Length: 177
Image 1 (cartoon, rainbow, N blue to C red):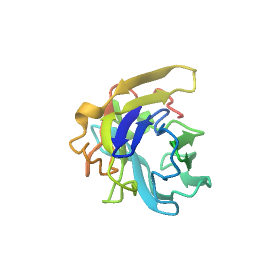
Image 2 (tube, rainbow, N blue to C red):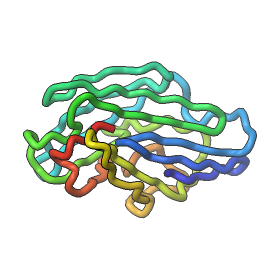
Image 3 (spheres, rainbow, N blue to C red):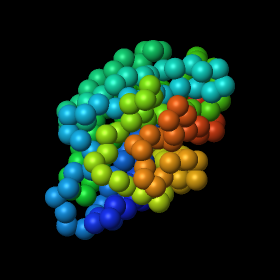
């Protein structure tokens, strides 16, 4: 869960299921991300830098499907209201397949200098991450805010510009969301 605040608004953002970002705030009609803007993402294995999915999605509320490099597809969907941002990545195959090597899965939002296009200054107070596996198990939620270098104001990168968030022992465990 990302917990952020802006001068006139309190927000609570969450990262669930490879990436779901939610924000909660008091009554306000202010959007949090520019509608129609693009952001990039990458899912990879480490060590070994095996990339299974990377792309640029449009923040428009419409599902987009990307091919996984090791077979299968990844559906990306986002939504927002005045108090909610949701980015969901869901796959029909393992997002961190053993065939790419490594032991740790990694996620990055903003790859190639294309982060979420946030409207206004947001202070990031917490960032929770959860992975869901095909067998019904899960990892998390775990708070990753301490790993981010830019939190006030938050720059829309996750975890940081040019960096990936590693989750230990996720490779080959059939992470689907």
